[in-house]
Image 1 (cartoon, one colour):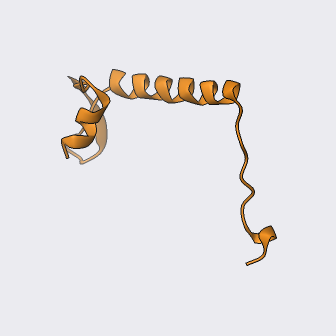
Image 2 (cartoon, one colour; image 1 turned 60 degrees about the vertical axis):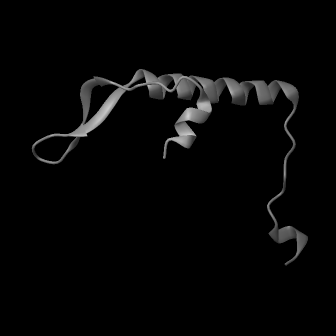
Length: 65
């Protein structure tokens, strides 16, 4: 493979990394702020009335598989 075929790697600076962290945190908060998903009688995915149970710490979510 030529160097031209490889995707160019881009370094991000400190300000951009903060923006990425903020976006991830916003997505995390939004996800856990939504109610659980379930199926209706026609097997369509719908939002339930049951709130999601947020893990106490981030690694609880990974280890409970």
